[in-house]
Image (cartoon, rainbow, N blue to C red):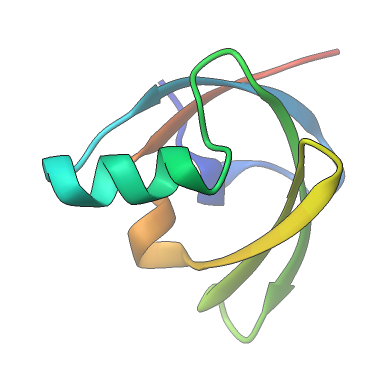
Length: 76
């Protein structure tokens, strides 16, 4: 499955799974990264270092290395 950093900019997607250590998974879920949620990758700052994601009516920034634990499914 593709991960969040591999999405094209503006591509809508559905979050399938949140991986990583338990405490990190919990923090991501508190930010709204819950399986089944639709999201879009809006921006990459620097060469893949920081990602801006739109989900649940808000925007969240994550490091690309940290976002690799988020498995997504691209939507048409």
